[in-house]
Length: 258
Length: 317
Image (cartoon, each protein chain N blue to C red):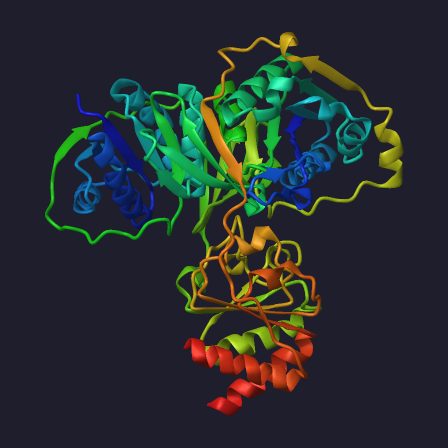
């Protein structure tokens, strides 16, 4: 079973700086693999361990992807090969452009049985790219997948909806986006970390791919800023525990919320 | 042909909210609001009762068919009618349908739309990014804009029973691929609806072990409120069900009183509590960001402060 797992490298939002005018800066942020995608990588790894085959990781983005630490990070988590498509124009790619480029890359990579995605990206969290890629490839595609097994020709999957878990049998190849409940990703072992630097990395540019349509974003980004902070009283209650608690109860009683 | 705004959700309660929002947005552009209905005559009547001015009736869904199977029908209908706006309920299936329609029609869906602004003359949509740490405003530059909207953004309308309008029947388009639905396991009904709770006590990583949640439950019970948690306690540690999780991908609450116990207050969590009337924070780290967003803060060990608070509230009764 050959599996492609797509991942995104994102700025760590913990490193986000909010300027006084509520604009934000991510210039100092460390770039990390989106947390949700690690579950897709683990899901792919478990399938390859169970059914055999090859796990290939794929990402598109700016040249941040080419950083050797970033490449080793993803490869130490299990994929056998890494495919990267880099172009400066991907810095603000919308879901449509991201999906088009991933689709073109997957077609260039050759045949596979399954394309995996995380639940959404840790930075923008549109939860759209996996579904769009599936649709563009013309494959059976679903989100919210919490379990994947294979019976040879078909995948047997569980899909965790709001009020029910659906079990589907669907023909391979397929494109599936997994939930945060599907597994707990293992940490890379020292052996895997050492192996990571020796695994094949294939680097493409936009010009290496054949895109089916134009590559303009379908949405214009008008502004990005920190949300307004509600004006809170910020009263720090000092003193011994019993006194502090009595003071708090007094305040809450006055607020009429007890 | 009049400009059309469409609404679709497989959840009736959510469809009500989408419809009221679409009606409001349609005023500025003189558009009519059409509901895309997969269901029987009762579902069509309900769409009109909620305010839809037109219904595209895609037919009644049989048991072995899933809503996702209607994507090709939806796509062909969009191609022929060219609606200016499609609002889809932000459920998991709703997001799947929005994504696939977007791909098929070369659009980009804006998901989890939170604020809507037409003052510039075109529809600007704001949604949360970076784990709730920032808000981003966008607008579609395509003839059809597609977005998803979750529950609680607008108030549901009072239905007008007996309302009616034009119904256009739409023929089902066979999908290119078919799955078989082999089993449907109902999830137990949600035991808690944080969105409507008046008082919420929230547990964070300051709670050392699962058994200690007893303090949190005792305080919540005493207040007549609900227990909530930050994400690590519901995903990863699995101490509490996911429906108790407050944060960017979980619940958004608007209680009169919110008390946090051992919550540090990262943006991913606090985005869900900003509409609370009174916020109380109890944590041992005086530098925890939660204190800057609280009305009342006690810096201290929750294992001492919470029992003392419980005793003080009991003494008051």
